[in-house]
Length: 458
Ligand code: SAH
Image (tube, rainbow, N blue to C red; front, side):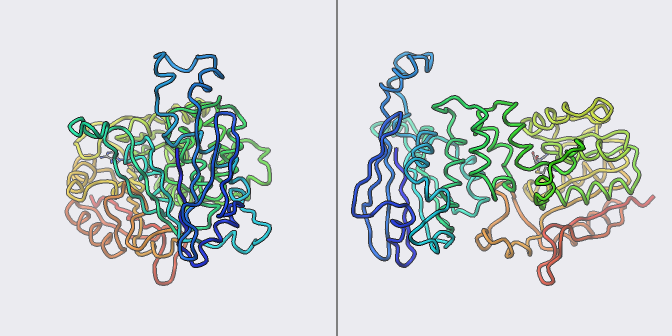
């Protein structure tokens, strides 16, 4: 399996200093499962490419595991492990580029944090396009995926499960290596070693400064830890303790200093707004993993909270987390699977509804159906809708111009666009509406997110 790393920043061969591998030489490292080789097919002042090639010994692998690998015996020898980017590659990455991965460069320390014009190619990776986009795009990579044919000799057989992934970004090398170290094993379905508690430490160390804010954080952690629930919960708790999770009186001081993410702030604002309305019941539409639902049952006296989402995966996570609350709180919440674009009698009779960062996940031509479902049929007295403010995107360092914040966003609105929509909806359905910024406001670009607070006029 291969990883190629190209630097196109002037003085491109500085890559050699950063990787601690001289471009004129071939470097070999012996690993428990094979050999890692680093070489430079090109080392010029304007372009320098380093390749990490990992030779996995499939026969050795079977022997070392005593042949316990899988059900199909020939599959132990004939499989994609030797060429698909996997946890083997991540291990090789940390063994060969460990110093760079840890952001150290004794000879040229000033290079460490310098953003480089980088291109990375993973010629073979096994993952669907959507997953690749959702993992890499929010980190500011331009993502190019070329699906590989199942069998080049028989084009009729169509595409296989493997693809070539090409990523481009302007970032310090150590950041890029950390992203790869975490995301490659998270994309891969197998892991070549037993996943234990020490994996959490590795994950948190390499995920520091980016993983907690990644929109797919829970998904990445879950996959990295191979769906082991205990480990996943522990990692998530340590990674981004929700501020409302601090029920334990003895919270360590370091925990308190952790940055409260934008999304946490937004949810707090919405929860506070809802609480002030003193509703008897709230429905959280597009509740995702249940963050708002948990806030409401933990910190307010609202007797009934329903979370609805179209994603059973998200609801599964929401369920797991609710189950960890004391019964007195847990029992006030319910979760249901459902779509917001179909009329649903379960949504009737609520005092308030929240749609937190949901509308931008719907195709614009479905919005009208949502408006009917929420404002005409369910028609709660209060509706809170939040959505990103597109004008603010220029302030995100890692975002390419014109990009959206999340691979699944179908649109992002300016403040004026959101206001126009909200006023029209209010006028059509007998509501009044006020618009508010959500999060700290920038004088020109506004706040990161925006909220419309609707009140039914009776
Ligand atoms: N409100 C949550 C999640 C926001 S992400 C939070 O703030 O944390 C958007 C959510 O909308 C996702 O969980 C997605 O599954 C859900 N969603 C998208 N389209 C939907 C639809 N048609 N019906 C219900 N939920 C939907």
